[in-house]
Image (cartoon, rainbow, N blue to C red; front, side, top):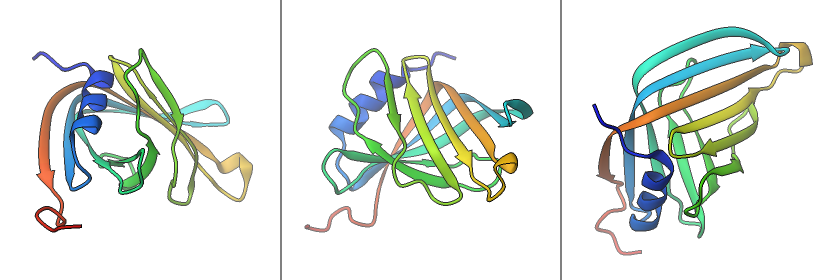
Length: 149
């Protein structure tokens, strides 16, 4: 099944949509890897994983909600990307206990990397999500659709 290029698709969605719309994006595959002290702990592959992409009311910001995580769904914000060959940026407003998040995008993959923090540094876990191949885009209205702002 043919897939869409990731970076240009997300860039176009963010520049075309309003903050009252959100996009559910289904990817062909997701690989989640967990590391503790640089050692691979666990690797999981999931087909047809989804994220939600939405513009924020604050100018220049967008939000991704990760739906298919191993423990819980979470959201983070990031600076809206510009059309380039790749995008590498810090995840903003990560929920605790997540920390030190980075997002990397190119036409082949969306990669999220973050730390699950713990009081004991030896118990911290680095998690990487690698999404590949956009299969489907679904546009939905938020409750604010149709309301004047």
